[in-house]
Image (tube, rainbow, N blue to C red; front, side, top):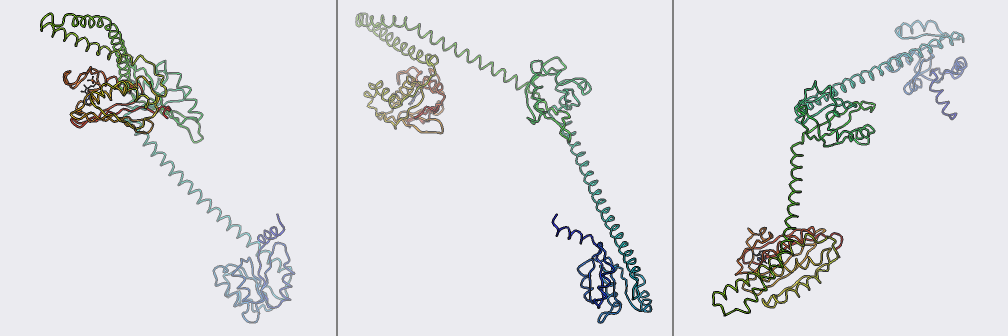
Length: 533
Ligand code: ADP
C-alpha cells in the first residue's frame, strides 16, 4: 500500500477534536497536551471559524475558549447546540473564571458540557478528553452496530419475503402441473430412473388398461415390447449426461388385455436444484390407429407395385408372344388380298379389307403395348441428352406426317438434360405427332419451348389444333383412353401413356392446358439432377 494511502486510512480512523481559541499560544499549548496518535486536532482561531469546520467535518469533541473577541465561546456553543448535526457534540469550555462556568452549565445543563479552568492541569485535561473521546468512540461503535443490525435485519426480511414468494410460485406451478398432468387428454406418467411408474394420469391408465395402483408395481420397461427395450437405456444415459433435453420414440407396449398397442413416447428428465436427475416425465400418445393405417398403406402400395409389375410383365410377354401369330395372320390375310381380290365377290373383298385393316391395327396396338411395357424394364442410368439433336431426329421420323399436313414445327433453343435419349425421342415424337394429327381446319403449327423453373426444366408443346375439353385433361394420359373414333383420328391411345411414363421415370410431372377449338399445350418437367448444361 502506498504511504499516502496509509496516511489517509489512519486519518480516517483518528478522532477529530476541534480546538477553538483566539490565541495561537493557547492553541499550541492545547495541541501539545493532547498530542496523541489517536487524535486529529483541528484548530480554529475564532467561533466563526469553528462553525465553518463543523459544517464540513464530524468532531468527537470541542474544546472551546469561553472568552474570545467577536463571537465568544458562549455564543459559539449556543449556535452549535442549535444545529441538529452538531447538537450532541460534547463541549469542554476553557475559562479563567469558575463563575462563568456555573452560568454556562446552567444554560446548557442538558448537554454534555464540561469545563476546565485556566491555567489548566494537563493531566486532568487529558483525562477528560480521553474519557469523552472514548465515550464518543463507544457511541459511534454502538451506532454502527445498530445500523448493521438494522441492515442485516432488512436483508433477512427481504430474503424471507423472497423465499415465501418462490415457495408460493413453486406451489402454484406444481398445482398447475398437477392439474395439467391429471387432466391431460394424452397419457402422462412420472417415471423413476429405474423405469418404475411413480404416477400416471387417467388417460394413460385408460390406454394401458391398468389402474394407478397396479401401475405403481410395474415399470415402463416391463410394459415395453421386448424388441424396443434396449434403445431407451442408451437414450436415458444421454438424457442424464445432458446431451439431449428430451427424446421421442414410437414403440409397442403390452396392454393389460394382452394386446399390444403403439405409443409415441416423449421423455424428458427432471432434475433438482443441483442438477441431479430426479425422475422422468413421459408423455405417451396412443398412435395404434395411425400405425395400423400406415402399415396397411405400405402393404397396399407394395401389393399395387407387385400387381403393376406383374401386369407390365404380362403386357410385355403377351405383346411379345402375340407378335409371331399376328405376323402370320397379317401376312396370310395380305396374301389373300393380293391373290383373290375381285375374284370372290364384293362381300369377300370387303371382308378381306377389314381383316387387313384389323391386323394392321392390332400390329400397331401390340407394338405400342410392347413399347409401353419396355419402358419399365430399361435402366435408369441417365446420360446427357442434347434436346436439339433429339428434336432433329423426331422431325426426321415425322417427315411424312409433316409433309402430308403442311405442318410448321418450330422450337426455342433447347438444353441438354440428363435423360434416357431413346425415351426422350419417344416423348417428343408422340407429343409433336399428336399436335400434327389433331389439327383443325388450319395447317398445324407446333411450337416447342422450354423454361427454367427452380431446379427443373419445364418443356411445352403448343399447337393450334382441335383442343381438349379440360374435363378430360387427366384421362387422356391413361393407356387406351381416346376421345375420338378411329375414323376421325387414327391411333391406339397409348402415346400419351408412354409420354407420362417416360416423364415419371425421369422424376418429372406432366399435364395439359387446353380448351376445345383453341389448341392445346402439353407441359412436362424434367428435374435438373445436376446434369443440365
Ligand atoms: P392416340 O394419339 O393414339 O389417340 P394418345 O395417348 O397419344 O393416343 O392420346 C390420347 C388422346 O388424347 C387422343 O386420342 C386425343 O383425343 C387426345 N389428344 C392427344 N393429343 C392431343 C392434341 N395435341 N390435341 C387434341 N387432342 C389430343
